[in-house]
Every structure is written in structure tokens, then in C-alpha cells.
Amino acid sequence: MDNRGWITWTMSQLGVMLAVVTILLLMYTAYKYINCINASDSANLAAENLASAMVNAYTGPAGSISEYKLPRRIGSRPYSLSIVDGVKTGVLVSVFGTRCGVSRGGAPAKVVLSNFSRMVKNESEENVTLFLENVDGSLLIGRKSNCAGCIHVQRIQYNASGYDCNNTADEYVILNNSCDTFFDLSGWQLSDMGHIHVYNFTEYILSPGSYVYIFTGCGTDLGNHLYWCNHGPGCNAVWNNGGDTVYLTDKMNQTCIEYKYSYNES
Image 1 (tube, rainbow, N blue to C red):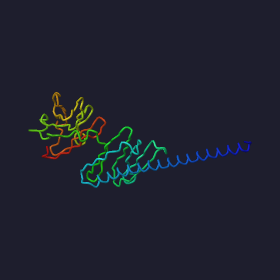
Image 2 (tube, rainbow, N blue to C red):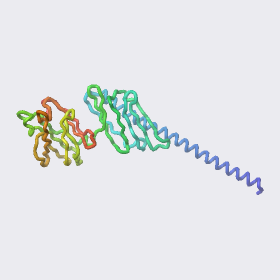
Image 3 (cartoon, helix red, strand yellow):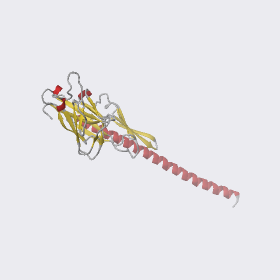
Image 4 (cartoon, helix red, strand yellow):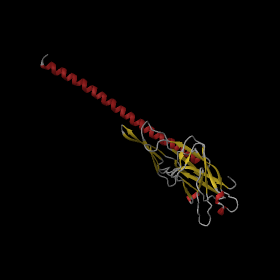
């Protein structure tokens, strides 16, 4: 083969290689483009689903509570989610780890959120459950503790016999655990409306199927009987006879119980 033959053969091989590389680049570009579109679509869908849940809660019966469980992954990738201003900004979802960087999607919430701005990061808060509550026309939204649905107010004795302020030994709350999970209540808090009176749990394990009394008065903690020993200004009672709200928050300050009662309910 003369030199011209070698040159022709070499050029033809280079042409084939160039064509193959070009095809591969086109395929990669198309794949990346489709991947980016899918990630953006997933982000938009997640934002729309949450916005829809917010609207449903907002337009539902006053005082009703609905739950929205965030996905473990969006498009099999980690994400962060923020809810800012409802109508103006709504829900914004950012999906990380895509081949196009960060893909974002959003949806207007169509409800007015008062003083709410929160970022939920998938990496540290997988399977977060948000609770949405419509109270007097305002939508409240936040993270519910993972004990929600397990720990309940079994009974509240708010109307102690005699004069409430002096008989705090007869004022108490009973909490029960209906799940097959042990809950370490150390660092948790029990409080009333406005968090005026706060009881701090020290070391207590609420085992499956068990219950615990929290007495307002003083005493020695023994078994499932715990004592608040509240000293209020003028009156040592905690729970209002005319109605109040029982809050139980975990050590991350997430709401586990928000139990409202009115007079003649016990």
C-alpha cells in the first residue's frame, strides 16, 4: 500500500471515530436533557402536591387537621423544600444530585401563610410529616413529631375537687402510648395554652401500651406517677376549668400533642 493509501485509510478511520464520538456526545446530551426535564417535573409535582394539600386543609372544616407525608426521595434524589409566602411564592422544591445540577420546581399555595418560612432538608429529615391546620381562617403548618398518633391524652382532670388552686394533687393529665414503640421523654415538655406553665420531663420511658400521670402538685416521682410541683402566681393550678390546650413537644421542640378541651369535657 502506497502512502496515499495509508493516508486515505487513516482518514477514513478517523472519520469513523469522529462519527462515533459525535453520536455518543449527542446521546449523552439527550440523556442529560431528559434527565433534567424529569428532575424538574418531579420537583414541580412535589410542589404541586404539597400546595394542593395546603389548599385542602385551608378550605376544609375549621379546626380540622390533615397530614402530608413528604417523600423519602424526589426522583430518587435528595431534596430540600421551602414554604414561604403562599400566594406569592408558595412551595419551592430543589432537587439535588441531578446531572444538570440543582433542579427546581414550584407551585403557588393559593392560601395566605402568616409569618411562616421554613426549609425542610431531606438529608436530615426523611419521612417528615407536616401538619396543616385551619384555625379561624388562618393556615398553620409545621413539622409534627414522629410520636404523633402514638401518644395521646387519655384523660385530663382539670377540675379538682374543692378549690382548684389549693388541691393540685387532684389535678393531672394522663398520657398513654398506643404504639409498639418505646418513647424516651427525657427533655420533652408538657405545657398549657400560651406555654405559660411548662413541665420538663427528666428521665422517663413511656413503654408500649403504658400510661403516665403528670400531677400538677408536689410529690415524689414513683413509677408512672410524676409530679409537676407547679408554683404559679397566686394559684398553683395549671389547667383552666373553662377550657385549655395541652401541648406535648419533643426534645427537638416538635409538636407531638395539641389537645384542646372545653368545660365539662374530661
